[in-house]
Amino acid sequence: MAPPARLSNSIFGIFRATSFRPALLRKCRLYHSYEYSQPPPFSATASAILASAITHVPSYGFTSTALKLGAGDAGYLDVSTNLLPRGVFDLVNYHLIMQRLALKDNVQFPSASEQGTAKKLGIGAKVRTLTLARLRANEPIIHRWQEALAIMAQPSYVPTSLAELARLADEIWFLAGDTSVDTSWYTKRASLSAIYSATEIFMTQDTSKDFTETEQFLDARLEDVTRIGGFLGALGEWVDYTGHSAVNVLRSKGVRI
Amino acid sequence: MNIQTSKLLLRHQLLEGAKRRISREPYRCFSCSIRHAQHQSQPPKSPQDTPGTTHFGFEKVAEALKEQRVGAVFSSVASSYDTMNDLMSLGIHRLWKDHFVRNLNPGRNPLTSLSASERGWNILDIAGGTGDIAFRMLDHASTINNDAHTRVTVADINPDMLAEGKKRALATPYARSPRLKFVEANAEKLDMIPDSSVDLYTVAFGIRNFTHKDAAIREAYRVLKPGGVFACLEFSKVNNSVFDALYKRWSFGAIPLIGQLVAGDRDSYQYLVESIERFPSQTEFRDMIQEAGFLVPGQGWEDLTGGIAAVHKGVKPI
Image (tube, rainbow over all chains, first blue to last red; front, top):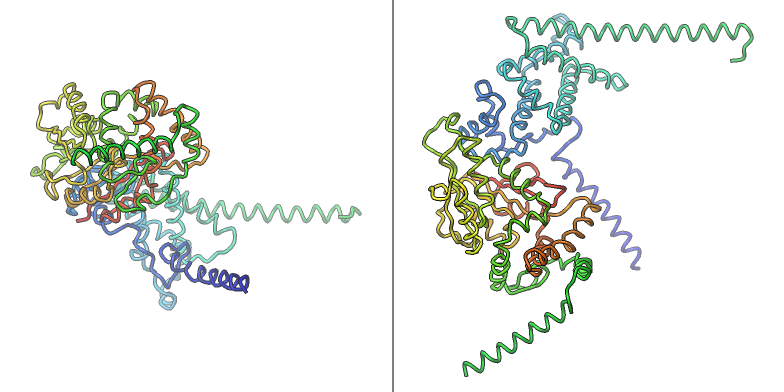
């Protein structure tokens, strides 16, 4: 009597465990869902301090001074900046995350029905628009952005920074409507990450009016990728054709392949 | 009759003491303290299973007694405190304390702060008798943040440790300035400190010895200003099991021996390592801080040297 009871108990336990799991996962979802909204990335207190601190970045840069002034504006004390375990990097990270999340509201593409009237916008053009929009979001603090890049390059922060770059590339491709499920999913995100970071560094040195040179730089890099992509495609075709012909020539000479 | 009862009581106490001594070890030496560590490395888990008693190292004593006995331990180690810390931690305790203070970044830079009304921080250093943390705080505020107004109140329950700190303060520029104050106080009842008056409450290697840790954290919450920070540097649990085995060997084998050789006081250092073993783990202590009402930054703590020590912080919400 006892063993079956225990068995049913343990089975019940398993069911219970599975039914509890979604409740636990609801807080942190690894996939994108239209049904649920993601929890806010920062706690209310931390975002209050960071949101006021970011307004001091143009004059004080990504420094602990900006953080302290932000804490003061939010009604906290200087010492309250200890709430941010990574200090200034949390400020940089806040900028990155908030600008990434703002992207979907900042850029609106006409829906499919409206597209018929206007010129149809390809995925490539959408990626370009989104990337430019994200770069333009750096405009107010571009003179301080090298500081942020230096902080992000500190060894202990590199993994988080790269992860954030990957998330940005993913966000851009997702918003552009890319639905690829093959290996190009990876190559697209990798190449966009490389282009974005290169253009961002170029932008810190750009003195042209309204960042026209940055725009040209971005276009040139995107063109490079299509050209390299085209070259790799042509190379593949050539290898395929030559390989087949070689095999066929050998077969015609009586080699058993 | 009074004399008779007191005699009886005395005899009873002596008997009890003798019993306890017999039930512990017949003699103590290096090898048996290791054996002792191995036997007791899994101490009884519930710290307060009977009301009115608390733990003193691995021993269980009446709550009223713990304060006295901790007092006795620190009175006996006060003079050799620094030498002993250096020997036991191989000098690493200085790095931990430096890191602790540098990360808190005390002091208000007059050049960058916009409002001139608030000048300097009001820091309360609990259990900081010898002034280790206090002098570092003041040095950091003066030299890094150019702040000549930040003041530290050093509170300790033990007058011997305070005397040691006052003696050391004479070698610093803060000896007779209003920036440094010594107060004899119990961290569970800080009646001389008004509500919401402190920017930063620090306790470095002290909270382990408190009889009621939760009461001390609640008292910290009371004295802190809204937005103020509770920061605690304390021994904690080592994460890596291999490193933990080595560390246990060192702490239970070598530290009481060093105590015996250098300070001539084995029992105090035996208490020290046992109290480290009994201190709650990182997550438990983080939960204690949260229960008192504090917001914790990130995961709530930062491990130092693989978890031998940990810095816990909490921010009082507005």
